[in-house]
Length: 68
Image 1 (cartoon, rainbow, N blue to C red):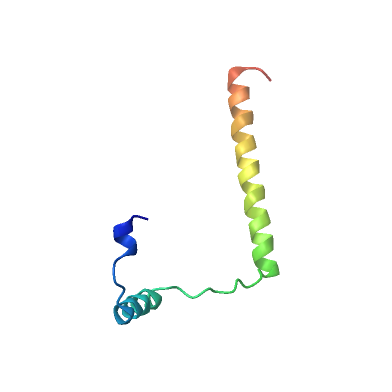
Image 2: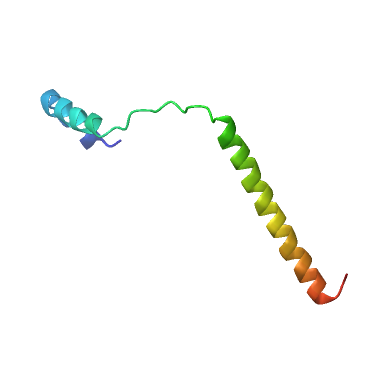
């Protein structure tokens, strides 16, 4: 910090008002609730489907090249 910044007078009332305005816009932290059994099964099945589809695309590309 420069000398000019250190020598500035601080208005505590104005500073408190600024901090109060900033604190109004803070988002409170939300506790993450645990996933249910159905949500876990859905997540696993969706990843399984994505991997299966990617594998079938790779298999189709290799088959089109005639390597299999």
